[in-house]
Length: 336
Image (cartoon, rainbow, N blue to C red; front, side, top):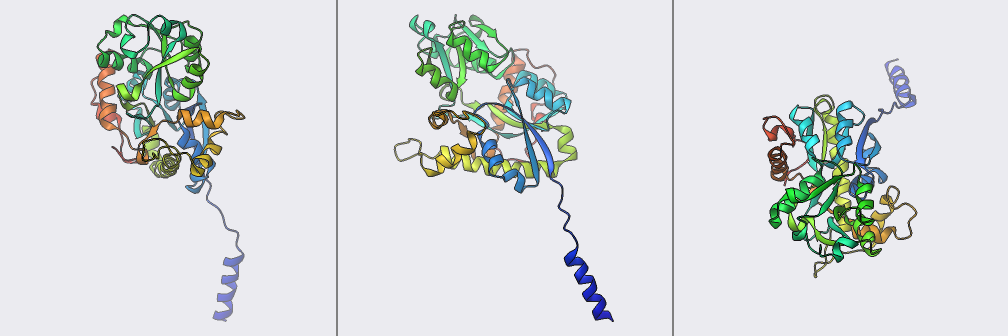
């Protein structure tokens, strides 16, 4: 009788339906550009799915609205440039930087300093000549404002001599310099090179060669950290997998220091083109010309982020006296 009952229970276990655990949904806020490419790769290769996460992208046209969307609960995680507005929110204990993303690195052409054709012909041929010129940024306190300020320090001209023109969105910055409405701006390589090729502007320097810094970072809310740390841990693992693939595809160098482009590279281009340069016959060329540097493991340049906070505070763009280190949480991703 006991044996029969045992077989009966075993048959029930075998026949019982397997109830799959529902995936945790995460909404990621990001710019609709090439810069978050490791996330595109990780999404298309199923790395988030493998971690039990259903990831949704929500695209924005500027950095500051991404931070605001996190505070309002419209997104769970963001990846974009750190701005004065972001640090003001982080001062209040609302947001935390948890990892690194695009890093301006010497020798890697990430963000270009662009001069309009008109300004270039009139003598704006290098970054040290930016003083006295107009410069398009998204808004005061943006990463572009920060970069201009750091260039001024490095090149020895007064930032106050530069006429900053806030135009709200990155596409407007590109259009403003392309049409000669402003003398200069900053654009990632995938946007800058085509503009230079068209003759509308000239690349007069690279940010990474002048002021290497953590241009974009991964951040989330304190509520997400408190309530869903396990989800963030799995999110981080999927992201790191995407970063590893990205580095293998785009950041390997040959003996001469030139980027290697092979089958691994082409395999990574395919998932990226689902989001940027979709249907563009020149997509491969634009991606190869525009990829930026990511540190191994999505590591965060902590010292540089703290330096950014100090700069914004020095400009009166970040209020409050809290310790900048409290704006970071390094439990999820490594630091450099």
